[in-house]
Length: 308
Ligand SMILES: O=C(NO)[C@]12CC[C@H](CC1)C2
Ligand SMILES: [Ca+2]
Ligand SMILES: [Zn+2]
Image (tube, rainbow, N blue to C red; front, side):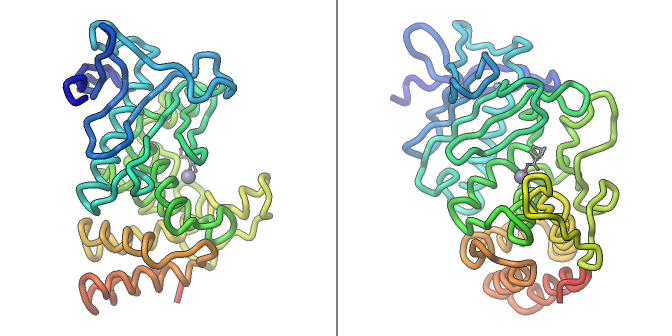
């Protein structure tokens, strides 16, 4: 069915034009990508009514293969960046889709109403529009898409429990792979966060305290393991492993860090891993792949954040 694969054009959230992989069927083009070496597809749908009753929503079609309307911007970027994340995991690690089984990557945009969030809900992505002040369409950031699809990879590998230290690691690995998708800055979500304010972000890997996160165990936040406590502060305490990642990447370089983090996530980490377990997993992965000098650098990166 390759003959039905097509290349369309689209306008992204930030007004940029990009090519998108589409599918031609019955005289119309779909945001549906069959080009990847997998049994599944990359498909992006619209939730229209804003609820979740209609997940995964409705296919997005254009007879002219041009997806340039305001409403289609979120879909264009969700689709485009999902393809980039697939390519990243496939080209760097030979991983075929989020589950390494070639499963579909399904994304639904315009989820909810003014929803300032995005999530992997176990079998697909959902992206809110944001309220236009805190966030714009959340699929407009490659680091956000990388973050969310890494939650899917984590789910099918280490499956880090989403609470306390394992939950903060779950969050940190998503921020780190989000960085790997967007290595031009140390910020998370900057492209879609506060569209009316430039230069700010949701989080910083180089300086977590800039956005209210600890960067050392001395400031670990013991929050309740409840929804109100963000499951023990998984989005707060992730600042500590995030800073360790910044230390690691600036010490051993981007390419080695990608391989070390992927090996730790897929070979060593388990659902109840702690920060100390993560340090050990990353040090061991560095030793496995690159030897004792690199392993020593990784160990120092974690010493610096108070994880000995
Ligand atoms: O950290 C997150 N999820 O665990 C975020 C919050 C805003 C961006 C989209 C989803 C990142
Ligand atoms: Ca970024
Ligand atoms: Zn997350």
